[in-house]
Amino acid sequence: MKHLLLDCDAPLMSFGGDLVDAYGVVRDFPSKSMVAGLFANALGWERFDVDAHAALQARMVIGSARVVEGRREREFQTAQLGANDRGWTTRGRVEGRAGGADTYKSPHIRYRDMDADARVLIACRLEPADAAPDLDALAEALRRPERPLFLGRKPFLPSRPLLLGEVEADTIPDALALGFAKIELRHPAAIRAQWPFGEPTGGVVAQDAQTEELTDERHWPAGVHAGLRRVMVGRFDWPGFMP
Image 1 (cartoon, helix red, strand yellow):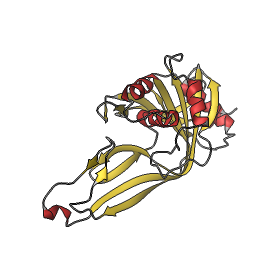
Image 2: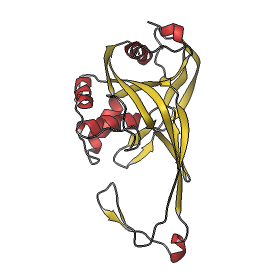
Image 3: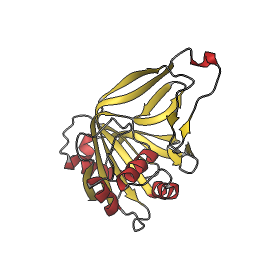
Image 4: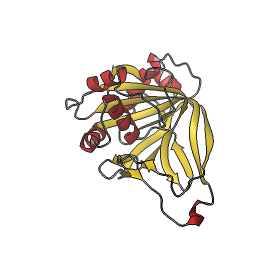
């Protein structure tokens, strides 16, 4: 099967997870909705193209590996907002603020995590493969995106072209292994990876594999994340896929 490989290499990146109070935590691996949104942005789709977003996300089978771990950083944000401060929403309307005078005495505080100097490889295939857009269309969109692409947050621009290439592989782990060969990765230790639940690891030796349950698929019409997706998380043993 044909797989698309994305090479996510940037000074800063963030794979957003569940917001907990004022803490914007990040995941170790990109969510399915984020990868779908990345493709959609490259294709030039708008936020209101919810049916197209949902159809593409449903067809995607993805996996990823942290070829360079990087380091986790935390950013402190604060803003003093007033009752008359207004802002644009994703719905294209200006939104005001409510509440009494005491509401605005304290600043708005938030902590947001990010990864510095990390590098993550993503493998993706489409099922069915012959529907539109196909992998060739996605690859062309990454080569010549309609809008600037970013990794999680708009300031987090990639250091290199995201498209690493297309490979033929039986499984997501095998596709990732071919990606390691493409970037000529030489690493002495096992590499942390995530791949679809029930997907064979093929020629890759997986260590400490365990099941995780994620809510990382976006319900595009409602604008929220819902559902449950099972994935496998473990380490790919380097001798298992050394070319």
